[in-house]
View 1 (tube, rainbow, N blue to C red):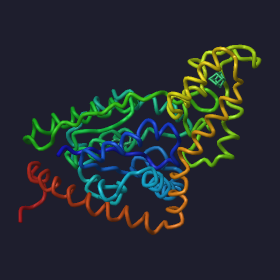
View 2: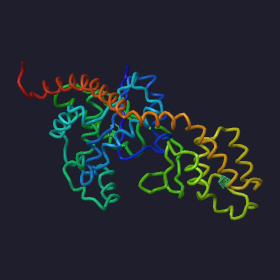
View 3: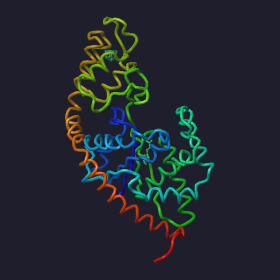
Length: 329
Ligand code: TRP
Ligand code: SF4
């Protein structure tokens, strides 16, 4: 059975963009493949090393989000990267064979540096980010990697590193392939891409009152200055959410109402709040329960690390052997 691996950095709780863009898909994949889902705290450290104070709490929060959303620890291996030390060992070994030029050419490298200009990212660790990511994937010989569009260069680089490794030492690793989910673009409350750092995110666990507070004042199609002005849903950020969460039949009614000005934007937003509150009610309840039993979450993560370590250690034994490292016993 092919293996799937994906990961998220523990940078905070998950919003609707994460659900539509990743989690929803992971939950499907875990039914068909042996799946590994990893919370990559070392990756978080590459950008947040000056203030790592929230990483630990974020790990628990993300794990709760995953589990409440339906990631099943009986089926999938759910764990924290830094608890499986072999990732670091493989990262080190891969760093020996990865040409600097490949890393300097990764588009996200310069892009991220520009975007996070308040931090000093001229570090060894940050340059090696995609090498660590490669280690995360190939240590389990995972062939399928569900990721967003922004990660496709990282997976491409992982393939290049694998080819180089296999060429030098023999066929140890399969080439990983990205699964790019065609995701509807979800916009945030200000009409920009939904992102925690923009402060425009709707979180998966936002309760109905918060949903109202965020959605009622949301930007809409600017043509609808008055309720009697017809609008175009295609140009409305609220509509991106309807497309992801409102059942088709109801959506058709809203479309009609918007384009003929027979409903106002507030009516349309009320439907969205209603849809989201109902859709995520079981999730909120499950997450709240889990957050009261953090030891249970930690137990699941420890068990995941134990399972992951077994597979990772097997791979490392092979790697040490072909690279001629250590002593033979
Ligand atoms: N770089 C990924 C991101 O920012 C996180 C990540 C780390 C990852 N290791 C991975 C994703 C391995 C997929 C596979 O989203
Ligand atoms: Fe957007 Fe709905 Fe208003 Fe149309 S009616 S502009 S889709 S919020």
